[in-house]
Image (tube, rainbow, N blue to C red; front, top):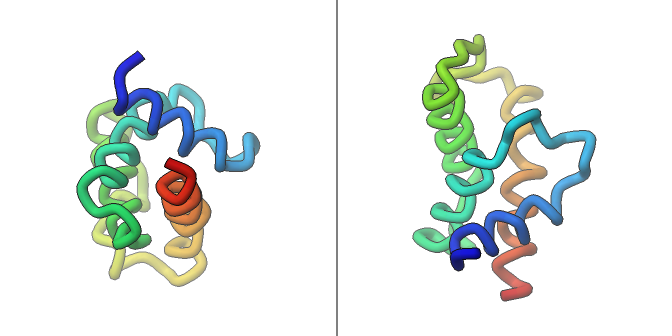
Length: 93
């Protein structure tokens, strides 16, 4: 297992199982890259960009695949648990 995969799994383990989308392996790899490049400076807009890239990779259209600032506040809040998981995983490494 690579260091990126290990970090991705650490992030995944910090997220409530009910919040993890199906087939999210690539999403968590993207979160791991964010963690490595931005560290504790990862923000909800960063997490949303990773999610939107994952949706693009999957070829799945979604109404929330727009810039973070265009989302309603309640939709923006959906990215925060993943950002918090990234921060916790970074703190543990």
